[in-house]
Length: 390
Image 1 (cartoon, helix red, strand yellow):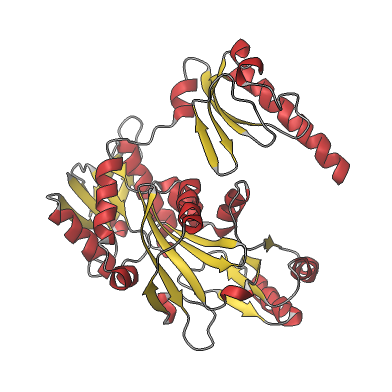
Image 2 (cartoon, rainbow, N blue to C red):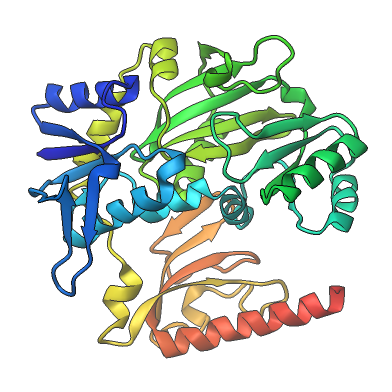
């Protein structure tokens, strides 16, 4: 394959290792500076220019887009997607994982642990938010921080309030998180590639710093993670829509807690700690996933035929609870249940006698108008429930 690595730092360890891994597998590879592209948006003829000249065709792209150029970098990546080039991580996945608030909101929809988080904008809401988290110490995070920069531990409510007010005055958006004391100064990073954990390490902060990032001087050591951490890392990457990700987790007393999902994880620390060819695993993932390019099912199936896919959740007190799939009325509405998400388990192609349970999430394919009515009923019930508790 002909592969492009989008990177501003050709001499960076991660970029060099990815290039070496591509070459070792017989691929033609070139490092392209993300900021040297121009995007020609033309109807029916999307085009990319590189250093003001038309870009030759590539089979696949490995994006290494720094946080400071996310907007332009993902725009370039979208153009590659428009052209039909396979991208190891999609522009949507990168944008989603870079938005700390959005990523936490997505994780909250799933049975996956993370520290309780509050986002506030009004000064009068700061102290109530801190108290809601159980009081200081709390962790304050800039929404656009990276590599441990913009992460502050505040030891008292007043100090936390003063820090947040100062950051707000400089137009910074911040998250307030519950401090997980049992994991102070340590975390686990797992590298996920192609739906499996290929390497994991524990990072340990130095001195009194509670941040364990390698860029902050943290020490790293290889670690064999148990099934709970492995499953959590894989699910977090999937939720963000990333084929490759570095998933940072705290070791909470009740299990793993997601801190962050990184779409361009550094390779130096984890390769040296584990002696695993992580770059090679990423290129292997690219080879496998490029055979199955991402398809926008909603767009493909709804444009002409009026059919599509949707998720339908079985709510408390639903008359579907306890009914087998065959008696739930889906087939009569020209709707097929493709899978059932039940807690951490996914039941693919459920049998007709499979009984539905409360909080099941059904992935359905069928006529959009009929599914729309099912979803509308779900929302009406949910709204009524919310009205009672407001």
